[in-house]
Image (cartoon, rainbow, N blue to C red):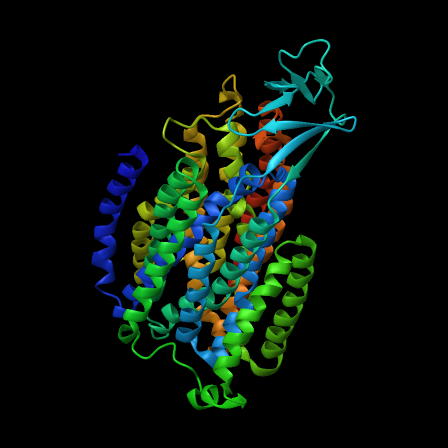
Amino acid sequence: MNIVVLIGIIITIATGMPVYLQMRKHPRGLKVLFFAEMWERFSYYGMRGLLIFYLTTHFLFDDAAANQQYGAYTSLVYLLPLIGGVLADRYLGTRKAIVFGALLLVAGHGLMAAEGGPARQYLVHEGTRYEVITGKAPKVVVGDTAYSYAPGQNGGLTIKGLPADAALPTELPSGSYSTVEERNPLFLSLFYLALALIIMGVGFLKPNISSIVGQLYQQGDPRRDPGFTLYYYGINLGAFWAAILCGLLGETVGWWAGFGLAGIGMLAGLIVFVRGKDALEGNGEPPNPVELARKVAGPLTREHLIYLGGILGVFVIWFLVQRNAAVGAMLTAGSVIVLGYVGWYIATKCQGRARADMILALILIAGAVVFFTLFEQAGSSMNLFADRNTQLPDGFTAAQTQSFNAGFILLFAPVFALLWTWLARNSRDPHPLVKFGLGLLQVGAGFLVLVWAAGFADSDYRLPLIFLALAYMLHTTGELCLSPVGLSEITKLSVPALVSTMMAVWFLSSSWAQYLGAFIAEHAATETLGGQVVDPRAALETSLGVFHVIGWAGVASGLLFFALSFVWQRRTA
């Protein structure tokens, strides 16, 4: 048995029992949402953990292009809940929106398994193309012979063992050559279609399943925050096993196997949710069933038109996901519209405590943008760092390092749930701004751990795995101070008419974080050939340079939120 799988089983058993015991004190519907979201996150994180490697080694995008593509996808994943949340609030109800989104996700993840043949790459020098043999040790074909390469003295490449009379020079300075890739257009289009289906599916599912969690508890119920933390455990149980199993299959058996297993996970989540309808106690139903069933276009009801619009919207997303600049424009437009609407509602419909609570919710959302901009480097720059500049034991793939974050949550989520409960019972629960400050401080410190560990790099410019694990541990404890608390606070602070919309705004913060995170990850890009890094030393220095800047930015943001908490509590006392 794979050692990582064995460790995963031990962690799951050890942490699952206290979670099970705590969940017995919560509404039955939490179990249904727990397992449904667990399988949905299994599918999402299984695909996400492999995506950057799929882009760089299968389709042979360079680092900058791969990070832009990754950012466009993840930005849209968190932008589309704006639509899904509003449609659920006004027409569908959260339960129907979740089922429709899950069906789209099953189709998208299943289509990801159709990988097709890998891209082909050519090195171009003075108008002549030389085929590159891709793989873990790529080579350049000159004549009938394949030659390995090494970093040049001042950048560029040194072709090893090349005869003096060869058509290609032994030394290729930086800028003297380029690369050209040939990709199968059919499978590339299917790949973008799969991403579009997943994006639209998440848009309908993600904000609404979290909203139902909040609806299970009455206002003032002390079980609300612990309930969200336990729900967050379920999310990360799915993410944990996705990283282990999909990461293992994707990098050892084939991309189709990793992506296919993610699709099976999504189907399991859909089945759990549909079968557990009764446990939701009527929550999540349409606000006006008669209006939803009204025929508005011949035999088509309003509900039918919403589903048809969602399917047609997939093709719009297919176009956008290939164009990062267009995603940025759409993100800006969506932000202006929804924040304008929320701002108008606060100014005209809210007074007193309700207005203060809504403003606090928006401040927390702004803090989440900063946190997740740094935290979500995990799927891009930190994932590539694990592959290129981290000492990985035999049988441990780079994609499996994504299990660190989720694994630490399995260990710490029950502890944090008990901690928040104990503090609340003793009237010592920290203000949400303090919790957010702690989260920001720790996510910054995680990057600084990697910077400070530079002196431990070996001759291959790889850091010991323990430092990457420690960075993820700090990111995780920061996440537990911020993310589940943020989910709970948004449902608690929002006026009832805007709960799903504000949940969508919460995910909008993640959309901005993904977009900005892709921009940061581009600065950590390094030259590759055949899907592999050309100069590991340059890759290490570049990555650590970026981590140094964003690490201190996280620390400074955390200190700012600590200061803001004192000001806020004095003004609202």
